[in-house]
Image 1 (cartoon, helix red, strand yellow):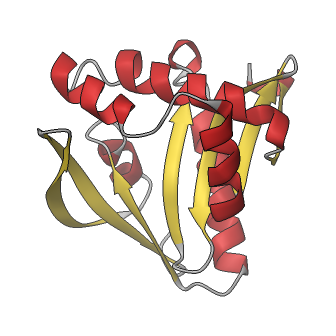
Image 2 (cartoon, one colour):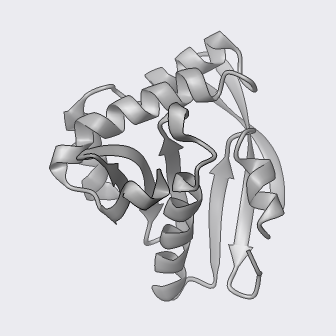
Length: 163
């Protein structure tokens, strides 16, 4: 899969695919750690429309993983604050290196832009993998979406850390 995947900055034409990747990653990919009601609330927090994701592209530089002409994963970064805003991969291709590569390239871009530390608020699925790659756990927190509490983990990666 990884050998057929191209990593590039997002284009407006990727927005509809981003909406679907996000929805399915949350609804299917997060099913082992979050309840159905939590996942429904999480998924509803961002509209499932291309227009909404095009608007996000203007707010956050977004790296996409493209395979066979479709966005199959993406990573948004907040260039001002030095943080990874989102990281989602189509559930059927998780654990094939796509998410790792998206994160690696996005982290590199933020560090090259002068940030000495990069933050991420990671889901319960992502946090253990990041910690095994040198990210440091800063805090556990809960956010509320439509009356549902969603636990997550704040992590940091410093330039001096080794992934």
